[in-house]
Amino acid sequence: MKRTSTYAFLLLLLSLNGNLWAECPLDHFIIGCNPDGVWGTADDNDLFVSSWQKYRNSGESTYSYPYYPLRRAASFITDYPYRLGEPGFDVFQSIVTSEPYTYGPNHVLAGAPQEDYSLTLRCISLSEGMRVVHKDMPTFTLDEAGEGFSYSEIHAARDNAHLHLSYQADDGTALRWVTWQVVDELADGNTYNPSEPFTVVFNTYPGEGDIVIDGVVDALDLVSLAYHWQNAEASIDNDYCERADTNRDGVVDYADYQCLCDNWNGALAPLESCRLMAAYLGPDSIMSGFVDSITTSQAVDPNQTTP
Image (tube, rainbow, N blue to C red):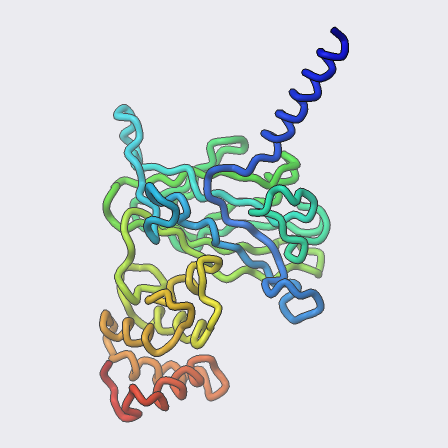
């Protein structure tokens, strides 16, 4: 009888352990440092966010859409009634190999949250009619660009980096978005460098070429395209260079520039805008190199000022 009870107890422990370490079915952004995964290089102290789970649960099959459809909440909820409880946030770790979605020894932040780093999630862009709510303690609501919250403070208080958020909107079909950035705000003289901005899109895909999502294709999108220009590592992991790789062929190139031109809303023509920004920023700027590249392409007449 004792042996049977012990066996049953061991089975129960194994079962609980399996549940304890089971991966969350919801999508998450994974925060880490050292984007290239090689220590001793220039980006060791750069924060980055893996986006490989972004839009994984966007439809009936994985990665059905490059956006999340918001769902109508219960009929008695009238305030921001279109909602979704993902994506959340987590961090890379080097201990539990059975959790491959967070396991990344070469991307783990050094030290302890709130002691060696203090990560804040800043909402740098938020569409009208959108808000982000944290329902657990501490509860908070973000409904304006510029707001944020201390992710590391929550991590330290719970001793758990796994975080869920509720994205809520007033409309279930119109384009809605949230753009985040991770920054280290610990004033210890050895802070991590901020991550690049990353955006979550809801309800529908933004217009082609609208890379910095705001509903128009203009100079801001040109700057983002120039920043990612000729990047040959566009993939799900980085949301295809945050949509700069518009045709999702793995590289940000002239085809993506042409897509931007075809959907241009700016006051000046794309190439003219590029040249103006390059002249202002100087010959060593990213924009100057971008202009040189597109104007020497066989597909572009160096003298043209229209798409």
